[in-house]
Each structure stands twice: as C-alpha cells, then as structure tokens.
Image (cartoon, rainbow over all chains, first blue to last red; front, side, top):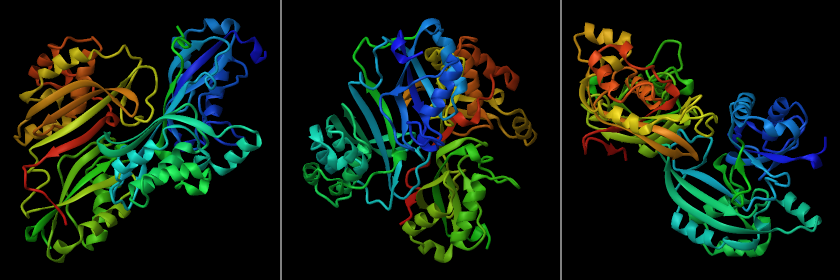
Amino acid sequence: MAQESAQAQLVLKLGYRGGAFSGFAEQEGCRTVAGELRQALQTVLHREVELTCAGRTDAGVHAVAQYVSVPVWGDELELSGRRLMASLTALVPDDMSVRAIMRASANFSARFDAESRSYRYRISCGRPRPMLLYGHTWWLRPAPDLDVDAMSRAAAHLVGEHDFTSFCKVSSARMLLEDGRSLSRCLQEVRVSRVEELGEPVVAIDVTGNAFLHNMVRIITGTLVEVGRGQRQPEWVAEVLAACDRTAAGQTAPPEGLTFVHVAYPTGLLTPWA
Amino acid sequence: MAQESAQAQLVLKLGYRGGAFSGFAEQEGCRTVAGELRQALQTVLHREVELTCAGRTDAGVHAVAQYVSVPVWGDELELSGRRLMASLTALVPDDMSVRAIMRASANFSARFDAESRSYRYRISCGRPRPMLLYGHTWWLRPAPDLDVDAMSRAAAHLVGEHDFTSFCKVSSARMLLEDGRSLSRCLQEVRVSRVEELGEPVVAIDVTGNAFLHNMVRIITGTLVEVGRGQRQPEWVAEVLAACDRTAAGQTAPPEGLTFVHVAYPTGLLTPWA
C-alpha cells in the first residue's frame, strides 16, 4: 500500500545516544537510528514503513527529542498507544528510547511542519577528563578556560537570517547550490552559558533556528571556541559569515558534544496517541 | 618506606563511571577504582602507594567527588601539580577522572577527616527508556508515577541520628555488631525532588550524612520507592527504622542509579597542590 493512502501519521518522539550509530539516515551496511527504528516499526506493523524525521543527525550526535512521522492506515489507527509504547521500547536497542507516541493528520510531516529545531552543544574545559558526561561533551584541552562573554558577543552576530555557507560542510553546500537551493537559514537564538550538569561544569551552546545546514552547529561551535580561547575577536564572526566560505570558519567540533534537544510544531498538530 | 614517615598527604578529588568497576576497594582479580588509581600513582611516584578514600562505593556506583589521600614524602613534595594532573589523567582509564589535586598535612585522612558525605540517587519513571542518563539512573517500570510528596514525608523520618540496622546489608551489620561497633549514623538531609537532567525528567533522592552503612542509600531508596508507589504510607518508614531489621525495609535499589557527589572537609585542611 502506498503512502498516499495514509489516513493518519504516527509520530514518535525519540531519544538516542549517538556513539554507536552511523547517524540517523539509513545507509547500506551501517547501524543507523532510522534502520533500527524501521525494523522495530515493521515488526509491530507487519509491513514496510517509511520514516520522515525532523532533522537528520550525523554519526555520533545524540538526541533527546528527535521526531519521526510514519504514515498509517486501516486497523493501525486502532492500535493502543500503551501497547505500541511497550512493543517499540522492547524492540529498539538500549541506546534508543521512544519517549512519546502521538497522532497527526495524514498530511503531517515531522520534517516540513517543524517550525524550529534546537540543539545543545556541550564543552568540558580543563585538564580533568569529563565524568558522567563523558561521551556527551567535547573535552577541550589543554584549556585556558573559555571566555564565555566573548563567545556570547560573537554568537550575537549569527542571530537572524543569513547565508550560512561558511558554516556548512563543503560537499553539502555544493549539492545545495547545484540544486539551486538556498543556504540561507534563520537563527532565533545562539546562547553561550556556563551550566553544571551531572555535577560537572560545562560550557553550553544552545542554538535554535528554523532549519540547519550540514554540520552547522558543529562549525558554529568550532568557530565560537576560537573566540573563547582569545585567538579571535568576537567581531571576526561577522567576517566569517560575510565570507560565504567554509575555510573562513573554525573547525568542525566533534559530534559527541552535540545533542538534538527540541523541535517546535504548531500547537494542535500533534495529539497523544490514546 | 612506611606511612609513618609521610611529610604530607596528596589528596585527589576523583570521578568515575562505576559500570565497569567491581567497586572502589581492591579485590584480587577484579577491576576496581582503587586498583586502577594505585597503578597510575605507582607509575608516577615510582614506588608502592597506600590509598585512603572518603567512602567505598559498591560495584556499579558512580562518583563525581570521591576523595583519596596518599602519604607522600621527600622529593615528591616538590612535584608540579600541573604535571601530576597531566600524568594521572593520561594514566587512568577513560571511565575515571582526576578532578583536582590537593595537599594536606601528614596526619590528614580522606576517610577520618570527612565531616559529611553526600549521594544522589536518580530514578527515571515511566515506560520510555532513559536516554543520555542511561546507566546513571534506575529505570523504574511499569510506572505509575512516584508520589514525591509522600516520599518527602517518609524521608523526614530518616533525618537525625538513628540506628540504621534496617538499612544496612545483613552481612555487614553482623560484622559491625561482632566488632562491637555502632550502627548509628546521623543524616543531615534526605531530600526527594523532581529535576530535569540532560533533557529528561528524574526523581532525585539527595542524602547527606556523617557516614553511611553498606548499601544504606540504596536501601533507603528502595524503601522510599514503596511509599512513592503508594504501597506504604510515609509513617511506615518510622516503623522500619524502629525494627532494626533489614527485612523490614524495602529492596536494595540497583547500583547504577547512585552517585557519590560530595564530601565536606573542615575549611583549611585542603589546599591546592601548586
């Protein structure tokens, strides 16, 4: 049965620890989040399924609130949410977590209906190795501590609508350009702050935007870190943005520090799957 | 050279993820925190060392602030703190973290000078599997949510000085009794609260006391959970305490939810190792 016959969308809120996945998107011969989830859903629904996600995450990137929509029909509409949750939780591996099961109308898309996406990038500064956060944070050393005020001033340049070519993986930018698609994105927030999580100090970079280019948050992080280390002035970030050239920006920060934390959908589109 | 000739104590603040350790204390043929740390220290100091810790943690229990003291002498007093930190960080395994290196007088003991110890026990309620906290929290399911108010009222009965025999591992209690030692301990705080950590909801039990019996926080947790589930009234905890009988209390909660988070020492005893 084809997707056109969908009568509703089953929407999953999904968490995962990214370390042992080759990213979200399915790839032949690799362990991926989509691959594991699709297998679990196919076991429950006894058929092939198609997944649409709010945002593809790279290999090693974590999520606490990825959203995935799956067209459903017929008897599937009558499935018990409680049993679906129990079955999917039992079927997905230990490093994945189905957080909530929701229902949306047939024309809903986890990707196209998302109004904004939010990510948190965690950095642990200093000589001590991270403890409970190990694997969920970028251990930056040897570390003169980061200048969070300077990073915040630098981050302010990124807020608003800009061409983010400088903050996009080169091969991805080339493909988008070839397809005649825009590299403009709108960031609502880029906040740099010191927080304590699980008993250890962390520099957190919280980024919210309408959509993101490939590696965008990780390149933003690598760029802000150069400012935080005093190697660059905050105003340099405006030059990086204006250059529209990946080589103008800082390094791509490693994936383990990045977590996909929130997706905003218009109120009322999603209702709990009873 | 014997400990008596110590001229100072080298004091380490230590973190570890407990999952792959058979606890803190050394045991023949097992991977332990003390074993790994002693090996690293011996490599740095080129001699045998003796460790004293603030509190032995069980297999699977985590720490963000364990303290360990090591008697040192002679040239060792001149070692650079910066180089000690770099060497120890390189030598200990990935699931351990040397957080800080301090100096104390020769008669200091990480165990006997501790004024109080604090632990956090984390519980994740509900059908979804924990995400980033997986392995650092007790996944309690199937879960009617816990009644945190009832747990708080129950916890209030435990504060103060009491005979905690009901909350001590039976074999340990027997040994203490045989040695004519007290099973009385004084708790300054037992706080139950809902918190959000790494983007997921957690019920946290924060316990501070002068000292702890074997399995004490885990049995307190198992007992409070019975109240939180509505299987017992809060006042029942006073009866459990009065019974001085391990079988009166709840189950021993699993180790992975427990983290050793703080030790208080008298002001001025510890100074940074320059």
